[in-house]
Amino acid sequence: MNAWEAKLAAYGTQYMSMGAADIQRRMAGELLVIQQQLDRPRL
Image (cartoon, rainbow, N blue to C red):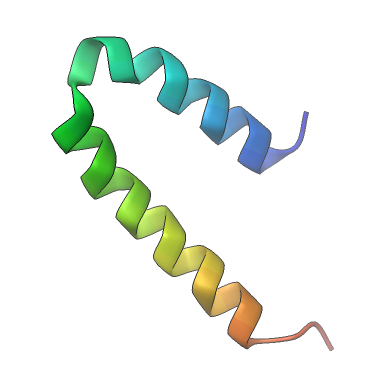
């Protein structure tokens, strides 16, 4: 399991205890990281 799959699995279990609003905030931060990685191709 790679790092992103592990994060997704954690989000799935945390959703039940944290609620949607908290998860949305955290996911927005993750999406920002993904976007930054896509904007910078590997050398």
